[in-house]
Image (cartoon, one colour):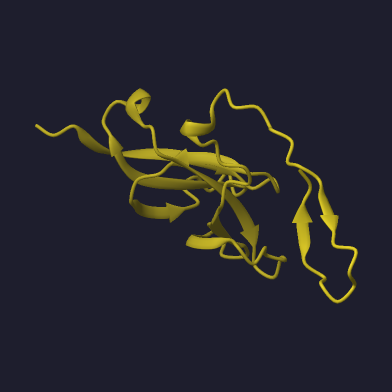
Length: 127
């Protein structure tokens, strides 16, 4: 027996970011015809959903809607009647938390002073 399984994630089409498992994407679809505003994503993850540690930030965009340049396509889904196509994109974390920075407060940097000689335009760190 293996400790991996295909898990299902539902992502609302609501102009918001959502988190899904970070494993390999198996399929993206609109699973239920009566829920055309929900995209379902299947990913390979640990069998125990609580053990899923790698998550990805995603958002659904419609065809023709503006996209951020930094979005990475993951898959598309067609609604049951074929009138709408949704596109799932991964978004980067805006402020990733770095484990080695936990508990470290912002330390003010020394103020820079400009050299008085205008010929020397390099900034110098004040003592």
